[in-house]
Length: 160
Image (cartoon, rainbow, N blue to C red; front, side):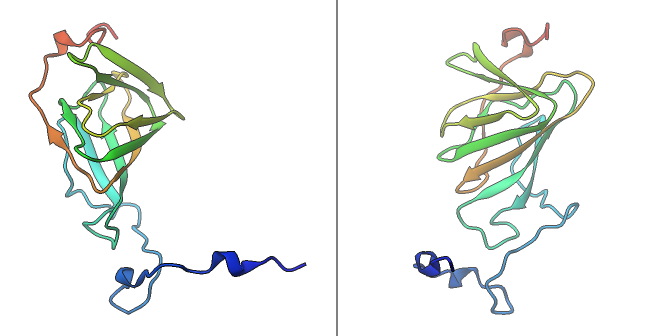
């Protein structure tokens, strides 16, 4: 029995994604060719694999974020963007709350959702190994850096 493919008919117009050749096709960013020209927040360094900067994407930012051993980002939020993250390697902590008194810890294989406009700090709990996240957000990589808080004010940070 042949499957019914009629339910997979294209209902929209994707012509805006045409490449210079005129073809609508997947766009591959090769490893090592990611775009480093993206917003960062102190100790959290972001590079994009899929973004408005170097693909036809207009509603999606997808990239890799790294924190060197023991480093943390500055206080920031991502504006209107919904953010999803996946801990690819390492141990992570995100501080949040009115005075950053709350936190969640994550490890390799954990997923996280960060709501729009939520101030937070992304940390690498490990003093010896890097932390690597895969991160996606809509509509693009919005990073609004805020006045930072001292390490001493982050509960359990100095004694991790």
